[in-house]
Image 1 (cartoon, rainbow, N blue to C red):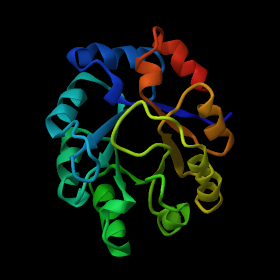
Image 2: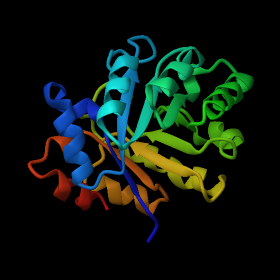
Image 3: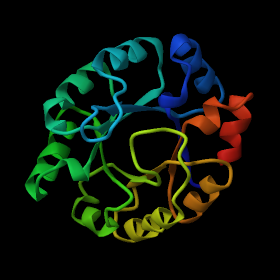
Amino acid sequence: MEKIYISPSLLSADFSNLGSELNAIRDAGADWVHIDVMDGHFVPNITIGVPVVKSIRKNSDLILDTHLMIENPEKYIDAFAKAGSDILTFHFEACKNNKHVVDVIKQIKDCGLKAGISIKPKTSPEELFPYAGMADLVLIMTVEPGFGGQEFMHDCALKIPKIRENAPENLIIQVDGGINNLTSKICTSLGANSLVAGSYIFGANDYKKAIESLL
């Protein structure tokens, strides 16, 4: 069975108890931790910045899966790399043109990080085909980015096989939004091999059981 990387979304964690939450998801079997960075412009919410990522890095050995939902991602890549991110994912929609997308991927890789590129629900998967061989990860949003706890958009999951068919075998296809014990199976059956889940994991009484139920 192919490895499925589980990346709990910190957006749903108890921020007053972040160190304990990071330890708890690691002990429960999480592979990565998904860190949503929002600027209040690209998406309507404002969340975590560089100092929090730096603090998380000091307190956790999990892979830091940092998702930049921000305008002008190129301005902040170096800072998030220095803060300790392992994977840095930016949005296709935040780029002005093809060259901008390629330059951002190159900038991330030049920092020694894995490069991810994400699309919102209304963006066609075909937009990513030119970059599937350059990026290490593609993130398909199955909710509108900006807030946790939204309902899974089934039509967005149909982008997974289209990207899988037009990408190298080693490309990680990650899905974020409304992931639970049922929607996770839909995504993995279509070819996804990384799942982001926030409220489903952090809202559970038993993190380990919640994570295991996604596989």
